[in-house]
Length: 312
Length: 312
Image (cartoon, rainbow over all chains, first blue to last red; front, side, top):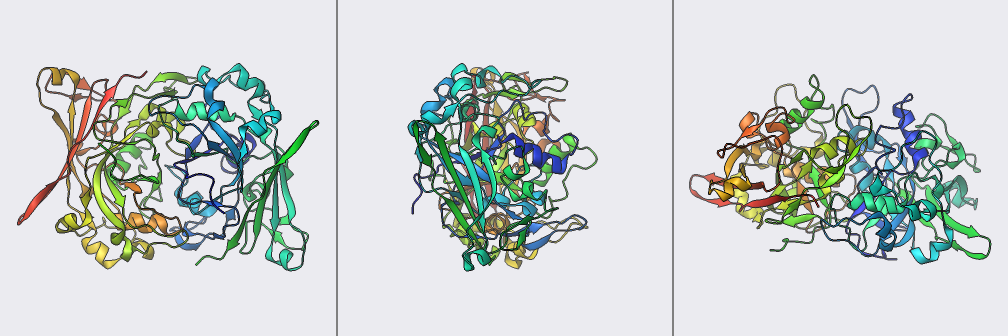
C-alpha cells in the first residue's frame, strides 16, 4: 500500500463546529467557541512525514505530560490516546507563491477526498500546546484511507451549505461565493468502528461508536482553500488538507474519544463487556464513509484502519 | 538560486528564551513564560512550500485582522509586518517512523546550519492563533540564507550550554546528555540590518538594528531533535528546523520588530531620518551571522535577504 501522492504539506483545519464546541466546553464551559471561530476557517500546519496508509500500526507515543495537580511533568507512554474522524482533501493543481486562489476557482484545485484519522495524544497535547499549538501530540501518525474519491465522482453528493444559525456573522467577501453556498457542501455519511483485541479474538465484529456526516462542517472545502492561500501561501499538487474532527450535535455522533467520554469522565461500553475512556493497546479504529442518493450508485471510501501497538 | 534541499517538513521551535519572555510580557506582564517552557522545547509545524531563497521578494500578505476595540474582523494588507532572526538547521540522515533519535545520537543528524527569517504578520497572528497556533501569519514566506554551514565546519565554535538560572528545572532524562551539555551550544554572532528604499536611493548603507548570539538559545539543537522524534515522529533528509527568534537580553539585541518596538509602542530611528514600528513596503531586511575564534578562520553565513513588496 502506498500513499496516493507525495504530501508536500499537510494542513489540518478545525471546521467541525460541534467538535470545536465540545472541546471548547471542556476548557471553557461558558464560552466554548473563541471569537475568531465564525470568521476564520481555523487551521494549522500538520506533519507531512508521518501521514501513513491504512493498516499501518500506530505505536503509542511517549512524551511529556503534566497531569492536573502535578508540579512538574513526567515522561512516558500517552495515557489518553485518541482518534479523530476527519475528511482529507487531496490538492490537485497548486498555485504560485503570492497568487491566492479565489474562492470561485477553489473547486478546480480539489483532486479528491479521503478519510483521515488524525491520531491524537490528549495528555501530551494538553501540556505542550500553548502557545504555538499541537506538535508531538499529533505528529506520530495520521492515517489516510486507501483510495481517492475524485471531485467528479462526488459531484452528485454536493449540496447547499447548511444555513448559519441566526446571529452568526456572514463570511467576509473572500470566503463568500454564491455557487459555493449553493453547492459547496458534501453529504457524506461518516462512521467510526472500534474493535478491541478481545473482540477480534472472540470474533465479535467491530462496534460502531459514532455516526456523523460531513454536513457538520461550518466551512466548505472551497472556503478552506481560499483562506489557506489568501495571504499568498502556495499549495502544491499532493498537498493534504484535513477538515478537523467532524462530530455531529448528538453524543453518538462525536468523532473522538475526548468528546464521546467527555474528557475521560464517562466510558464507552463495548459488546465484549469491555469499556473504554481512551484507546488501549490492541484496539483497532476503523473509519468508513459512504455517499448515498436515489438514482445514483452509492460510493464507499474504503476503510481507514489502524491498530494501536504498545509504546516502545 | 535554489534551495539546498527539498524541504519535506519545516518545524519552527521557540528556544530563544529572551524572545519568549519579551513576547510573553506583551500578553501577560506578570507571567511571561508559560509553565511548560522550561520543560518542553516548544515547537510547531511550519509551512514547507513557502520556504524560499535569499533575495526572493516578500509580498505583504492580505488577511483577517481584528484590531483592539473592533467588534468584527477586517480584511486587507497586514499593517504589522515583521521579521524573525533565527538559525535554521538542515537535517541530514533521518529516522524511521516510531524510532526516536536519542539525544546522544542527535548531532549525527545535523547536516548544517543557515540563517532563517521567519517573516510574520503580527496583526494576522494575533487574531488567528488561538487555539491551534500561527498559520497564515507565517505561511506566506520564510527565507533561508544562501549556503549551508556544515556541522563539521562549526565544530570549533561549539561550546557548553549556558548554565540554567538557579531554580530552573533540570531537563528530563531524554533531553539530558553530558556531551551535549558540554559541547551542544554554538557561539555564533547574529545580526539584523535594515535598509529602506529611501536609504537605498540615497546610498545610505543598511543600518544594524539588532546584534544577538546563538548562545541565547535555552535548548540545544540536539535537544530539539531528541524532543521532535521522542514520540516517534520521523525526520527526513532535507527537513528544516528553525530555532525560533534568537533575541538577547538587551533592547539592541532583540530579533524582531515586535520586541524592538515593544509591540509598536516605540519606534526605531534610522540614519535616513526615517523611523519604523513595523516593516514598510520597500524595506529590506538582511540577516547575517559570523563565527569567530582565535586560531580559527572565521566563518560567515552569507546574507539572508528579502525586500517587502506591496500587497496585491
